[in-house]
Image (cartoon, rainbow, N blue to C red; front, side, top):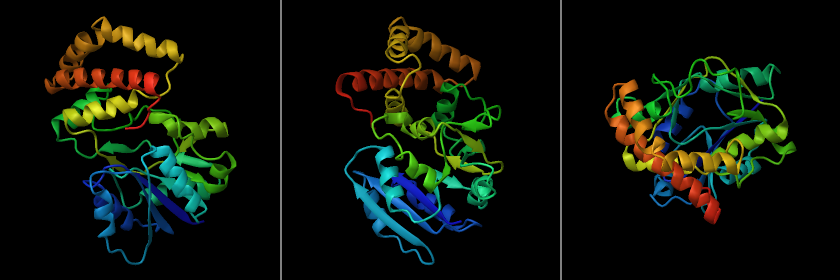
Length: 281
């Protein structure tokens, strides 16, 4: 079976070369790597156009800023592999990542997979560390080791299954990658030893932007869930008590300010999505 790796990019000039280098070093070679630029304004396309890669089929597509779901769908529509692999531009990968990730699919134990072996690439950065603490994660894993062995987000999936349900819901915002499992009626299965590394937000500005994007997601209990979070913030539980608890719990003073910025960004995302329908970064 052949692999098509699809990478959506939006203002990722800092990371895309490192991502590609680690993909090029894989023990299981993909048939093709498809990058879909989602309207970047930071010269990501300039970086990509300057790349010189041999022995790989690298295709670069672009679109107006529509969100990661739309970018992934566009990439999938051009893919020729039997298995679609979806990764982010700010990720790096262990040399055996692809081999381990698709092994359950190749041996027909799953239609699609994810990996719990996701670690924070920039753990030495205090704001990157604070991002984990804001999410209640104690160590440098981006996914806790106690996480279940199934998940709603697919890192790899049979192309025929992807096509069967029409791909991702492009209007979902932050959690558009959940829509695939909802339409399929099955979840991704954990692929052991598929190790990879993800860059956390590394500044207060980056924390605000990422949290604002997360605020656009679907909430449990829908509108009631959104209202509950906003009331919690207005009462001060989000803006003071929660940041203080995070900073004390993890003995990490920068987390106090990071959590405040996180809460402001998250609530901004909720309000912006409700008023204007905007769900992308």
